[in-house]
Image (cartoon, rainbow, N blue to C red; front, side, top):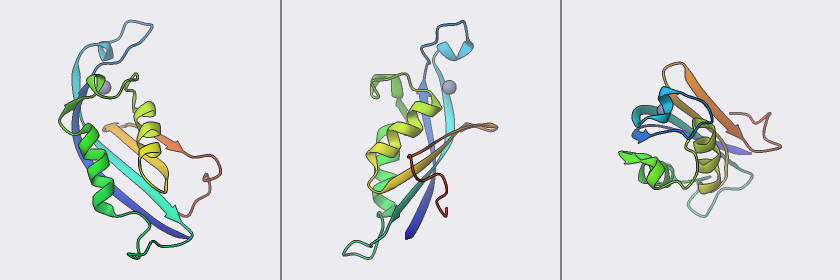
Length: 117
Ligand SMILES: [Zn+2]
């Protein structure tokens, strides 16, 4: 099995739709660190699992310097964002979404809990 990971920093704005009072319901921004993990048993014809630049295009293109509530179509919690990104990136099995220092969510596809990276 081949593994790659890519770490990116993005800036975005959102507000959370919560069923309780919270300052997170107001518009605010984050400088987040997103780490994307991909794997494949075989490399593509270019010798890659997933092109690092395609990962960056997907993550930055859909999140960086954007107001996510206008584009995502779901409640943009760190958990939901990690899950959403994982589904958009070829061969992705895990996304770690560090929304801020000390606040991190992760999504791991079923069956990949013990992956090497
Ligand atoms: Zn937030």
